[in-house]
Image 1 (spheres, helix red, strand yellow):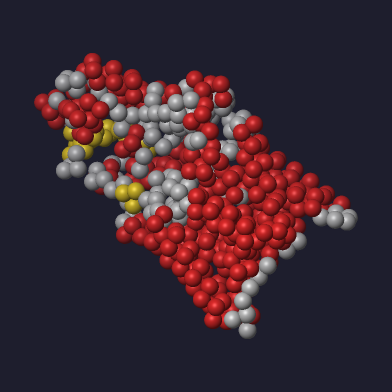
Image 2: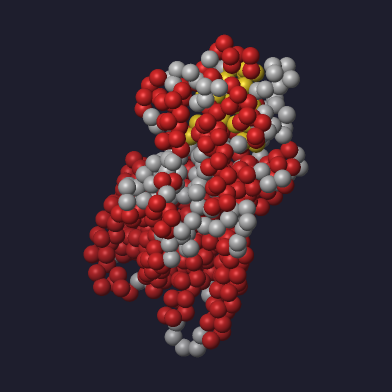
Length: 536
């Protein structure tokens, strides 16, 4: 009978998780062009790993494609690559949330069951399956990128740790390094706290922990920290503070208008910016008050999760960027601590009565309350990237290089499998060698885009062997130019000078000159030019 009850609970959890995931991803199912914005960084490398023009470009060190391959974690990259023989990577990015969300919820149910019983497991997973889709900065699972695997592989580790399965723990730790290293840091610290809390002889466990830690550190160094000539050295904190790329209008606005804004930025303290944290914290406070002294008699691992998150968060601040963004260490610990404590309080209240009817009422009441509290905060976290000009670009030779405004170029490789000169999403200034090339390309691009000379555009084409330039007419209208928000800093100031110098004389808007070079124009406000034998 107990097995049947547990099976029904798991079925309910899976069904509820799928329903919430469908609600948050329903737009993406209706059109292939509606995706999470990070997908444009992680799908093109999969195409480039297969034989063809993109693969040739990757082997020739194409700037954008090679950075995408290096930027991705190897576990995520090669998982997509393997599955790409059976399913298109773009489709896989939409399917994975429907696998990872229920998987995470079921694993947390099993963890809660091990900690106490099925009631703790059920309410932990039920709160969690809503929580993961409520974060304002993109959600944990949308797009199926590397970060989407973090909770499931974290929960696998906790489950094996509670099961005293050391081989399982090591296997999952390696998986965490391959997919999302910050979770491995969290898991190792929890592992250590678990060993310190044990009484008696734990020499074998300590030796295994040391071996596991060494394996993880060596793997992490070889994959992520080894010097790379293509990327070059990382910029230092002192350099970041002086660079507009990390200021309020840069690509990575970590510091806002100063160091205090840095402490409040998404990547540094992201969990505190979640709109559900106030009510989740309030639920915890009520639960803690209700549990009273029993709060401190909860399973030690719950407190290990909380303490680990705080310590890792502080260490990531002290060794800034060496341990990735500090906020990541709170994202996977603090909410789970709050959720588990709340679930224990709910279980205590339900168990306090012998009446089956009252218990059933309390189950239904808490299910409805959790649902109603979370529904207003559910986020779809997808964007519509549909553009008419993709169809033309797909007719061009496969080895074509496409240039255009970096915002417009972001999805081009994803939907057309053509190389692009520079993208906004990949214009990060973290690495000196890589960014120096991005910066040069970006300045040259806008120098041609807002030029008053056809010769400048032709030289730009020749310098980079560009085949086509995509022009967005909306970037030339009077209102847009008056707003002076052309692009991120430091390029915005450079573009503004070009605009003030050449306004009214932009050659790309001079139909008498440019019509000769147009090879495509659509009703969506885009046209494409190319220099070829016929029009030169």
